[in-house]
Length: 490
Ligand code: BG6
Image (tube, rainbow, N blue to C red; front, side, top):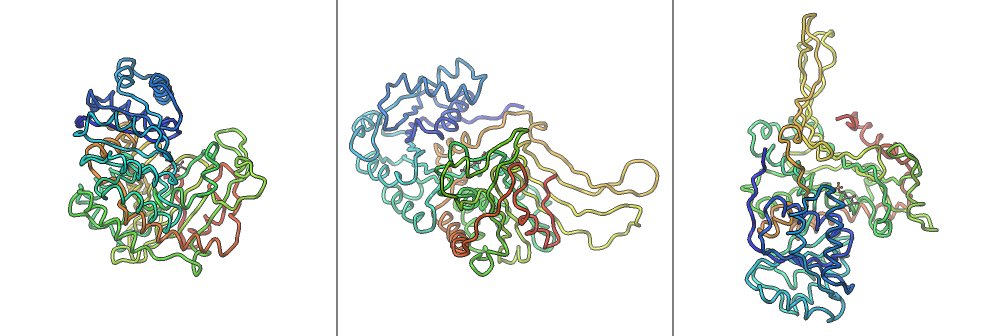
């Protein structure tokens, strides 16, 4: 099946941090793939910006390398077309150096969409935005993309938002959370709101609990410096996992219009029951990996990867029992867990329905398991609905729990589009539906901050777990004392 591609209007994208990891691994390959898909207008321009002086050709060679690394079968013609669109300007975020050059490059195309992509640390957002503003580079069609983390607590998030907001109106600010650009995450909305089947049972009367797992098998190698200042709660829960929770829990929005969707997500964030010193000990678990095995080989522990002399209290694993205090979800726990160096790389949402109220079958039928809906984000994206069916053949009524299995790769046979491809094109189109609004980011921090405070006050170090396992045993106890279990096999 061939995916339908709608090309976008001509644009200039200025990537700050163009020689950094994100640009190299995600942004340049994503733009190349859009070229292959035929979505890039012929005269689109990609202007790489960083402090380092570099000739255009040198940056093009770097871009070629990134594309070839991410796609070893890159198409030579598409790659040549793509590289032609690339330019480079050395600009210093902290002085006037290079800004004149950048203005000159952009001035000829005042009327087209202009995107500033800030693929830099948040400490530079303020200066870069201020200089973009002072250099008169903000036109009617200018948009700014802000990478996470937006702050490291509510106070700093507000400061970042205020700094960006001084130069850009909220309609031009695109706070990216790449989980919202994942195919299956969008499918969650299709599943809920394009089918009549689920919505009537999507509430506390029929759903027992929800599990959201984002497990990674990799450690923090290469990013330990940043990671140690963040930890799993800030790095994954504050953004990706809470966004997933919101999409599962939100009320149907009036439309897919950005504010309608974001209004509903915001209501969920505001309805989260607080976790603080009174209950953090009981409903959260933090862990840190020790040496173990991953992908068949021995791997070192977090502290060795960090290479610090001092022990670190940063968590590389977190599990939380979250609750939403509203009419729809009262009494339905949302169990969240995420970590590095876990047993496998799997991200999925499990919606566990309540068991049947009464069985009409005798003991020979076997155990009747509750239905569950599994939305798998990665790998093998797809949706499974677990049902009870009769074992085929004669011999009486024996029941089995089996999945109605819809694997997207098998069903559609199309390439898995990376989240960044979709999201960058949404920026060009000016569609903010899959981006976080200022109040959403702040509401998420409002819920996260007291958890961080409680951990700090308790002075308890994170619980150790062996790399290659499912995290500390306390996270199993967290769910099992409620009579439930993590569904790793789903
Ligand atoms: C990033 C986090 O936002 O998401 C990383 O900073 C994490 O620590 C990554 O590894 C996971 O993204 P994905 O798309 O590989 O699941």
